[in-house]
Image (tube, rainbow, N blue to C red; front, side, top):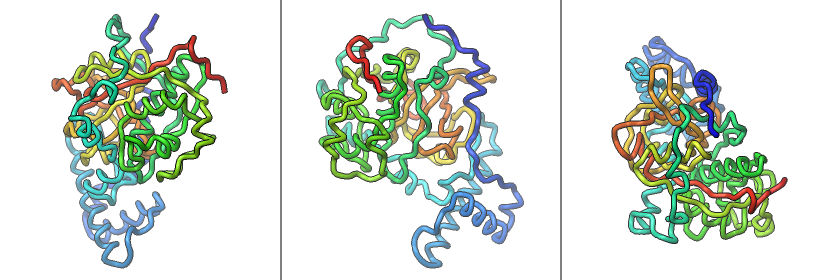
Length: 361
């Protein structure tokens, strides 16, 4: 029987923002002040100058200036979220999109006719949570011990692997009582038939790989490298955690997604390519975004803010120095069926029977 989590506790856990570089109107008032702010930012994030020579540094500084002004103007608006001068502050939108929002979900879907096909990303043909009722007002799988710490994919489009692993780690904890950090690198190196390492992939394909492979090994056994390497067959054959299969959440239905998230962390795809997402710091994200799905993340809960705005709790893979210590709260219950940033378009989760598998580590 599910019991609602105290909303205040959920809010308290969710609102810790990452530490960006604070600045004011004065820092933007002159070229000299902007240069000082830029050097402070570089020192804080230990960012070396990308490229070689004065021209490359001048270009990077110009990008930084434009982003600082965008963040400053954005925070003047009456919105329930704020932006920060974070580690992405010297990247253009295009650079950011290519580097960090690189799962290219739409690209991979186009290879199967733009839709999920039976046996090619159509799950096990059902939705076990369709009849879920009397849903709690708030759920946070972090509080239930089913979510590992925030990870960092680095400059590699491997978000699909991180999204997959969050969901598998979650259902394994729920079914066995063990929270085990699992290996994204195994998926990167060994699941190379339809997924493409740093060039993107689909979470459904990764669930299929884990099931057909007989399991997945631990992060400790096969640590993340941030590049695609040759599959280590010995580690691939270490089946530390297993799943029975996976199911797709009915598309374009936030109520169906809520039913799934009540029961376990869920892999979701979103459009994360906008400036507001790039510089998100805290609050309930209501920024502009489309539905060109380009980033894999995981919905690990939901709740309602003090002002009544409903939100999803989303675990990202860009490190703790982005967003709310690596998380973002995204508006829930929006008018468009696909959800904000397309969060309800391509959701899926692994299945696991407690009686069938009792993975012990």
